[in-house]
Amino acid sequence: MSQFGLFDFSNRLAALSVFGDPLERLNQVIDFEAFRSSLESGLNFSNGSQGGCPAYDAVLIFKVLILQSLYNLSDDQTEYQIKDRLSFMCFLGLTLCQSIPDAKTIWLYRAYYAENEHWLREDVNADYALK
Image (cartoon, rainbow, N blue to C red; front, side):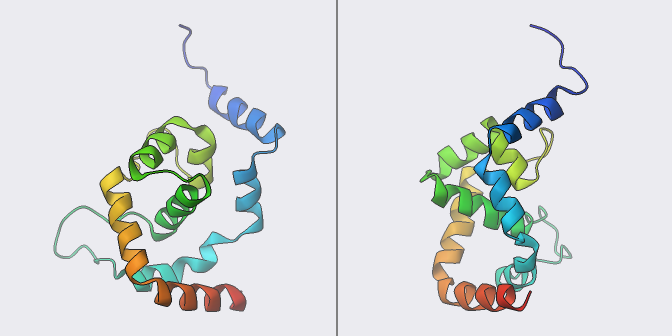
């Protein structure tokens, strides 16, 4: 097995881009940052004053749920595919050394969004229409 080179990762991503990665195109077409304020206000993230693990980024979780829906993945498979696929990591803005949400975390956020679907739909649609 050869040693990991300095430009191997970026060369692999460039090769994926040449093939027309649909997730890369999705990132170009949709400004996911436009949803940040709605997602953060709806999730009621802790400010960290009471301790505990820091919450995952709201846009990251939103994109994870989009991947899960697009590829019809279970929570366990979503976790595995994010760890395994460079295109998923790139879509999420993650590097190889960053932590990813585990299956239980994905399940919790998905359940929360399902319970608050009416809020999410109204707030996100309003935010995106204004941008």
